[in-house]
Length: 504
Image (cartoon, rainbow, N blue to C red; front, side, top):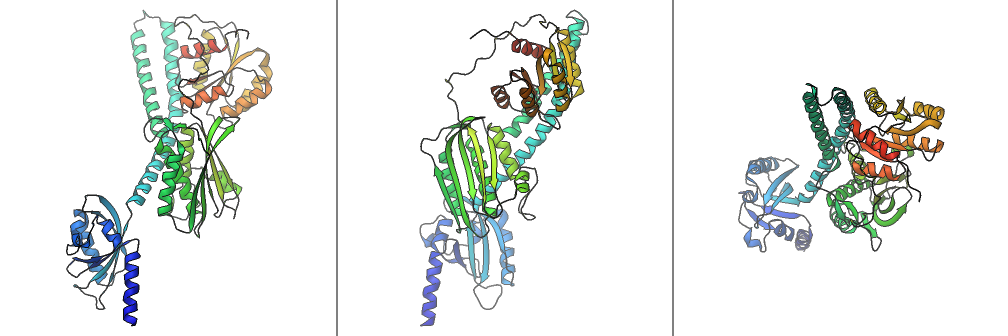
């Protein structure tokens, strides 16, 4: 009776087990498999698989490794092995296998109980995350390189332009100067391509609905996460679209949800929310938030989670780039990310992505392009040039003075504010670098506007996207110059900014 009950229990477990369970004879042939095994082998009937050697289904490079593993198990070894196999219908799968002896006496001909778990999707997720982390690291390197190299290019090309204007078109050296300028423009394009690698890991941006992507990710999480973690999705009806790429949103969600999972080793609740919101700084946005009921973070950890290679996970469980990836991609979408967390009370990460405006929607018109051969129009007006690179200040000074302006210089925020307070009455405009040590250009801009809300500011940078430049102009700046810019682009932009505005 006990034996019969044992058989009944064994059969119930064998049939219900979600992983594939196989009985392999001493000669390597399959003798029995459960329903999950049929799915793994893409078979409809056990007869299609039983009697065949398991190695027939393995990728050739993995067959010898499996045979060696089997011999070790028959010798008493305990462990697992990852392999690649192909089902009857030709689908390739990554499987994690483990085995145990069925016979009391170990030996060469002993039968084995083999378990096999399909880890294909898990490996694909890991590959996606690894790729996104690599792209984020490349993007950071490219941005750092672009900032320094673009400054050098700006100084080089500005100097060449000024030399060309002094030599004149008939000078024997003029063609050489023109060739050097052409090479500089090509170098600038190379830098922009490097930045593109970091800013977009896959494809161009286009209208994207977030809800279908979130639903797909949540379905995958429910299948793969610890069953003690409850995963829910809440979404507003009529969500707006954003300008993105499904791969970017998917990567953001996977990184956030992976961190949420790691914060709940004993289980908990993971909630993904999608909302339509309005922000003063970004306007209409779609808000994506991921909340967990895990261990939470104090204020210091919350501040540091976006630092490259910073991680709160134990060694070998993370490299500290996941949140750097998220921040990089959010910046790519011209969005914003915030962290809300307390120790013992879980965490909530909120991402706001601007709503996509239809292509036929009215946009703010750009100032009219001045004539290509317009003469210098400065009339002794003072321009404050704020840049930490001396070479750029020298070139800007030469170009602006040649155009008839007076130039004041500052190398950082404090000196810029000091000059502005002293010379405010005669400063007509400010040329302001975005990326500087200490105070950023955006912070200096706010301080300048506190002193004079109407101060005309032209931002310049070589390491932010054109989209971010447009956002800066939308926040009160008059124009944005992408480095490296020519002396003519600088003077033309300044002329546009200082044009008298018609009465409204």
